[in-house]
Image (cartoon, rainbow, N blue to C red; front, top):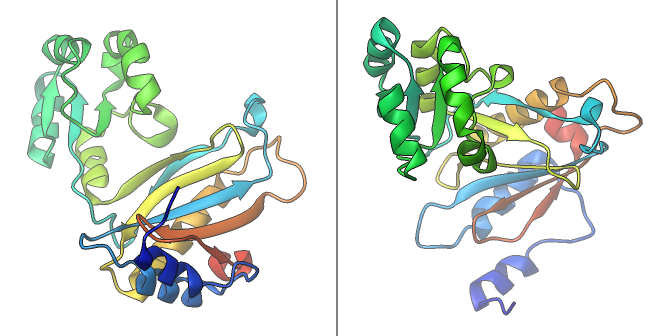
Length: 230
């Protein structure tokens, strides 16, 4: 893949052999985010786990203290008073059987899916549709809950789900390049803390092996683990 002049200039600013302090890494990230749009701040974490084993799966949710900077469309499976609660909290799409039919048709007009516990027998039929998109409601990450109002507000406010991939890597968007350096650093530390808290019982040896930050179009910057964990 051929990179443009701006990327090469950005790449030249980064020492590929160095692990930067979080503050240094964030400063470099902002300097190298040169696209004409507000780039997403992305974090990639290499973990010492093998997710093929059930006792080494890492997943959870992080409440970013400074928000994600993106507009999240929330769909809720609920009935009656709970449906009203979801709507009042700002849910974009609320329904039951009617919403099920729309999703089965491929009309998925939301980024995050929440359901009340009583709706799960219905929502379970959507596993093959929502599962591959990482959108299946799950009590472990707070998306199957009777407190739908709180869950909707959380999703709208910057809650980010994470799940380790096959190679033991977690990847997520945790803000925007337009955020201040302090706000980006605060979100990074919150995300690292959430992943660390989700360490599975089967994880042996070093859990956090490497952390890198990048903007959507920019090069990666390696971060000192101790700096991002403090």
